[in-house]
Image 1 (cartoon, rainbow, N blue to C red):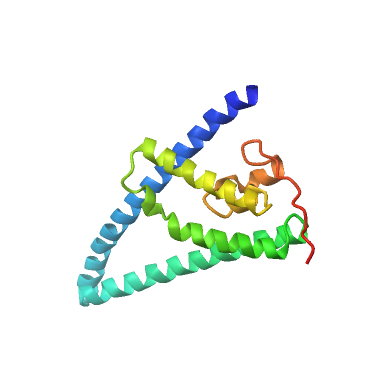
Image 2 (cartoon, rainbow, N blue to C red):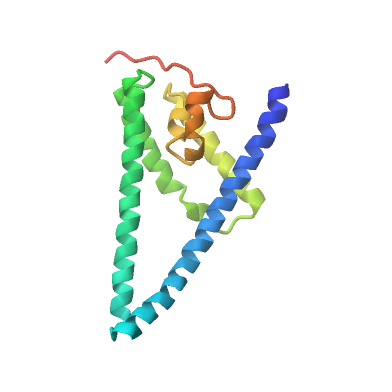
Length: 178
């Protein structure tokens, strides 16, 4: 009973924190392009360049950086799942299934999902996503923490090795016969 009294408030704070983070990232993304427009204008004037060409270079650079960050993120997730396969916690087939499900979820639940929601709606949406992940993982005989770490719960990844996500300890997943 004591665990529920501790876990539920911690979970609520975490959910609200994620909602605030998404909101602030959206605000930063919107103001970031505006702050660069001033820089673009100064560079164009200082060096006698067309502002549209300088803006194009800045946009190309930002898009390349975003793409590099996405590739690094995907590689880290691939490495994390490879390690779980090597540790015998999931099978190679389960790894592929997890990656496929994460791709599906990422297309369904983008940060834009939270854009115009109230804090209460954000909390409900986040809970819906987490419930869907847990349900899917259990139906696949995969511990939900192995899926959640790759989708929206990155901040809690370190907890996998220190007792789990909010006290959830990963269970051994049976290895199906090939």
